[in-house]
Image (cartoon, rainbow over all chains, first blue to last red; front, top):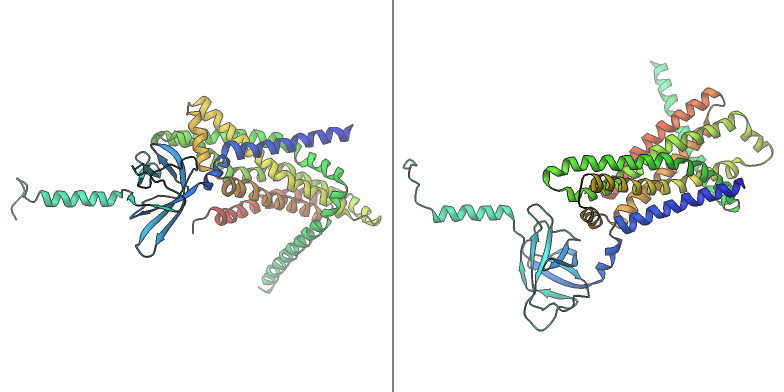
Length: 163
Length: 261
């Protein structure tokens, strides 16, 4: 009887442990998303990917349809090559779709947004997206604004002392 | 001067010898493990002693650690309007660090010290010696079941601690502070990786800490001076050495697993 009770308690203990790990795996982690790597692969060349990371989402019209599975550099053109894995459910994306790197919110993480094109042929495994728009790099943006104001506004402001 | 150097040398040599004995002890423990599978009853009893009896403290601590994380995380994130990331903060800090480390520290205090005292008293009352007199090796009978039970209990306790902690964070964040529940879980799922975070953090770390804690506890008990003072000293040493070892190894493992080179 004593041994039976002991076994029961240990059984409960082990079952609790299994339940805890199940909770961690199913509710807390990305187990439900592991299948996402299985989608078909599409390549996109970007001049600058900013802060894009592997595993970043790929969206179309705000709906998540895949994720970034690889980031590399093309040694010939010095462009960043981003590999996207797209859910096979969305296999009717036109070949002239464009990809841009966007930021969710002001300080949020970066993701790849797709814009559908109008062609009749569809993207398949290994396709390359021709139309891409790089990430906005804040420093470059500020630099451009500064040069624009400098060149467009060459007249000295009134009130400034003459040179 | 010579005497000073000699005492320094002696203490270094003694430490080295002790380290060597500890490693030989671990080898004998591992060698004796197969016997446990022939007598699973021994294992069940020890699992009860180190596992089931540690449950209350582990569950209560996990709950409170999770709730505190929820409160503190909220207080800091609310300034940036980023309270939706609270789930990620709570889950990642519990899974990667707090779960394994705090469970190991609690385990050392709750179960490790008991193991040391038990083995130390067995030695002090010459039970181990009398077993050897009867040609019964105490390693497979007494030490190996305790070691294996401890190594199995540590990951289970860590998993329970982490899961309860995340639930505690959920209670505070969603039910009390009004963070959006959907965002809490969705952000968590987006950031927590099954193998990189849960596999590395909860599983590998807790197994390493379990081996460390039980090895140190059993060795200290086995090496204890067979007096009441010696046993109390050994129990203290178990808790101190285990805590230091766990923290040191945690830094090492974190640097290996999550370090950015």
